[in-house]
Image (cartoon, rainbow, N blue to C red; front, side):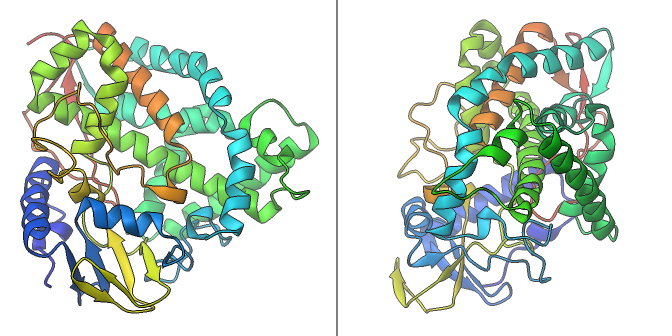
Length: 397
């Protein structure tokens, strides 16, 4: 199968990318729901049920050795990421991390996140036009994660530059990795000598079966949290503006019923998920550990597979009228956070950040609307589907 040209077109706008992705995924679900790409050397899985099967059956579809084609580990830190692990090691690592990422811990972060969102809105409320990505989508998750790891919040712009370098094709990605490592080493050492109540301190104290996270495990987790926890939330906050621009009636509904913010987050994640659609050179998905039948295709041991969450989220077998944007949709079992043992461990935090941001935006910036004076551009990223800039007016048109 030849991959469509739009997947790697840097000049295409986010909305045009989204439109072409919808059409391509619909065609593939109907004609070739499991298909091999010779170009990317990977099986692409477009249907919801087949994708859930792949994500759920870790014995048949392994996450180990999920490295980039460039030979770099997904954690970018030189250590093994939990993303690459299968049980029993994955189960042990996740149990350790879950102790620090408990529901109680995340809920207790709400006042802190609310203060950050309020401060960000305070900084822009009197302005006529701002870049939403620079004003809210980029700083919020970086600031939250910086606080969690004991890094200086005021340096969020520098952290964001390094983060984007790691996620793009920029030549300075190795330098960005080294800069992050330097900060993480300092944070770990400071927390080791003076532990507090923050998540990094809790991670260092967590224990399962008499074992704690090793130094390398902590470094790997810092990378995973800072990168994955940042880009997903940033991208979704940007995509939220695109969704509401296309469906202003739904933004009006959110303003009338701010309690719908949590449901709105799920529908934004479903209809405009943060990840790009096709294969990329960073994450390869799963590897078949044995010969297995998937759909009407024979998968051989050692074959790589990639499930397409974007396509899964529009599968009409799971989502009635899937192309309708409805912030009251229920149920909404989208696959944007994954499924099974690798379901995103940071999902509760990301959901909380986005919920608070949408609630306060609807309440405090009711006149916010996207300006169409300039064409939208995609962020230079290997894996994320995000607008580079979003100029919004803060007063009613």
